[in-house]
Length: 374
Image 1 (cartoon, rainbow, N blue to C red):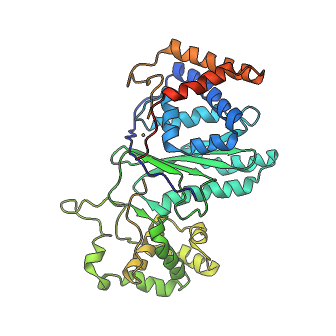
Image 2 (image 1 turned 135 degrees about the horizontal axis):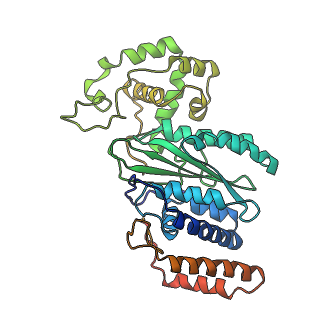
Image 3 (image 1 turned 45 degrees about the vertical axis):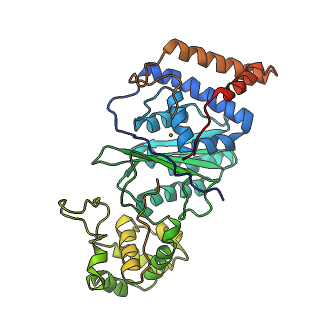
């Protein structure tokens, strides 16, 4: 099984303003050509695999000329890819976006049934991916962007991003169908973030397995018994509860998302009791099982049954044409345009059987610095 790569940290800050039109109109043909090259050489699965790699995705954004440290490196690059990718040319399409556009993803995926895909299943996957990063991973970042890439075989990659309202940092979450054996245990293909948070409730960690199982068992106890457990937690250990309680800001600097739950969605717990979920994935699927209820069940699991969740945060870049803000250097527009022409010509000649330009591109790889994984 391919394990999630958790290597390195990049500062993804919220930058004001928009990507300038002169840059976007160059990003689109460049992105289209790069993706077409990858698909022609390696197939659609390889393109999805690369987009699911946070390091490759960041490098792609940099190659296209976007800010190396901006949250917009996600939203703009995803927007460009969504605009240019097509089944006809690349064998891959993208749906979604940020804000309201992210809410239309299930509907857009169901529309892909016209292409022979299982749109309902893809829509269900989209919802679960978002719910896992919203409820099962509680790291202080609120999701605001969700982009779903899918090929004609139904293989998929999801790139979604959250924002920490207090720090202004962004965090990007990558998923790939190739890596997901269990959607609620170590499901990510990678993450990239502004920083590693000190305390994160990660119910997807392997070490949270027993806590997940206990959470499922708890909802099968029924609402009255579970409510008594929840309301009578304090006698079971004041010192351990400190890990869950929000401080006054003068002592322990525990983030606001690591708090003692003050409420549970008892209607959702009642629905879960009636459904009798067979596992944690089915529990998360229950309507109303959100962050507060997940946290409450995890608290009871630890305090009463001794099954603690993981509090460890489950969390590199190249430049080709500079960045729109002039960092590390201004975008040389003439060079950018010449590179687009070269790539387009190489693609056309490759289709005609003349692959000398493609071979030349491959030879350039020997001059690239080796990729170091820390």
